[in-house]
Amino acid sequence: MSASNDSQILSGKPVAQAILEQVRSQVLALKGRPPCVVFIRVGNDPASVSYVKQKQEKATWVGIKSILKVFDANGIDEAGLLQEIQKLNQDSSVDGILVQAPLPNSMDFAKIASAIQPEKDVDGFGVINCGRLQQNLPCIVPCTPAGIIELLKFYHISTVGKHVVIVNRSMIVGQPLATLLLKNTPQGNATVTICHSKTEYLQAVTREADILILACGKPAFFDRSFVKEGAVVIDVGISRVPSDNERGYRLQGDADSQSLKGYVAGYTPVPGGVGPMTVAMLMKNTLNCYHLCQLHS
Ligand code: NAP
Image 1: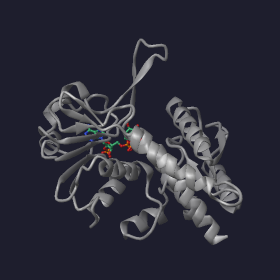
Image 2: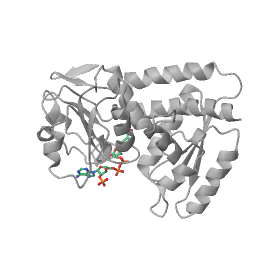
Image 3: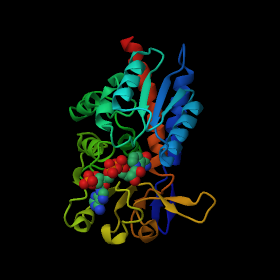
Image 4: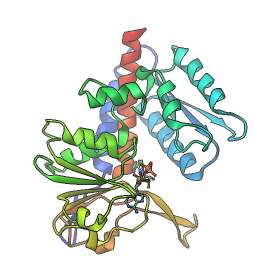
């Protein structure tokens, strides 16, 4: 934890590292083959290439075997991808399957995610895991929302009775996160509002938040005029913005962190906030899937 003009910087790095170390020691203690996850990427979206690379690096570090299957966007259609998933569902040497978003527009991501056997659904986006989450049953919880809950817990940020405003209604972030925050648990019991692109008076709504969770993909859009003084801001958004560094871009969150410094109680940096949490939770989910697959074999 560090402070910036009295605003706490809620780094995800130490939290993610602790989770990765725990997974690593649990993987080391396994008897037999290590867990195996297959990453599927369709096309060459630069951000997707980078995300899958990071996931593979962390998998290697914790001792999880990972396999990458790359398909040319013009070389496979939805039916072909469904067939690939069926093959992996039936392969007993595979414990986890992840289809990296985004897919080409001609493919229905929700349909593809739901074709993954629920015990191998490391992202938790399939209809069975989504339904089980809603019904408070054991399930694979989507990595980013699960990581945000762990981050809040690590920094002792209570959600109980707090007004949490989430700017995102996707199945990847907003909806599962709202479900987790509404649970009758120490990391839940919040009063939750979800905003989206049709929300009227967005600024008035976000200014009501004790904890504001941003996942719009609008770089530096949220300055202090959107935020209540002393609130906690969790910045999920990641955008590439042009920069004169050697890569030609830098990563930017949805929050204008310069404007928030000294005004909010704490905020997550981008990069280094929610991103590392997502990857760490993916490793945890993969190990859980391994155990589920062993149970069902
Ligand atoms: P998405 O499906 O496009 O969702 C974006 C959400 O923002 C939608 O609900 C959209 O509303 C809403 N939105 C867009 N413009 C808005 C506006 N002007 N006012 C209010 N709401 C607005 O994207 P996603 O996959 O959930 O990802 C969102 C962001 O999070 C992206 O930057 C992504 O890179 C990042 N992300 C980061 C991580 C991580 O690990 N850090 C993980 C996942 C995603 P509508 O539903 O009405 O369109």
